[in-house]
Amino acid sequence: MFIGEYQHSVDYKGRLSVPKKFRAQLEEGAVVTRGLDGCLFLYPKSSWEGLWGKLAQLPLTQSDARSFSRHLLSGAMEVTFDQLGRAMIPSYLRDFAAVKNEVTIVGVGERIEIWDSQRWEQYRQRSESTSEEIAEKLTGLGI
Image (cartoon, rainbow, N blue to C red; front, side, top):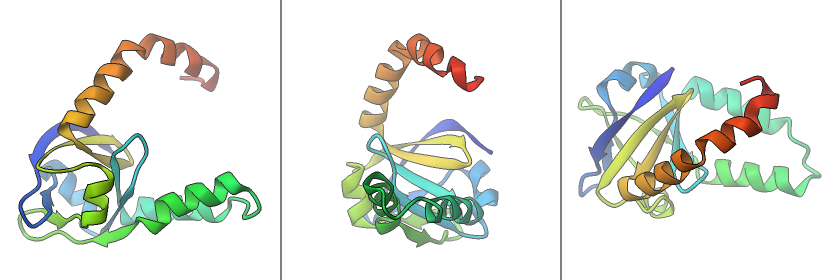
């Protein structure tokens, strides 16, 4: 499980260093793709395969299902890590998430989110200001 929030930077070549405590879970490979809310999603290969299995079950005849699958799959790229725990993030994904230099890496259970630090701070502040309302809406889901 990925948890926590970490500050890192992207180097001039577009390489991102993943927090050391996350690296062991990514040793067998990983996939980075367009996420939601303006961030990137980074999945361990096994979690990505599980997600792909769920996407494959979505009905091809539903427009929203096709759009969501396209969003995640068309942007996906397998990544490998060097000895320093760095992975190359393609420019089209850095552009999508407005990632320039400073990033916030957020552990969110089975995935990692990669945020431009400024965008993350704005999102976090908005989310925290409505956390009670969000919690009430999720009550019916057993949370």
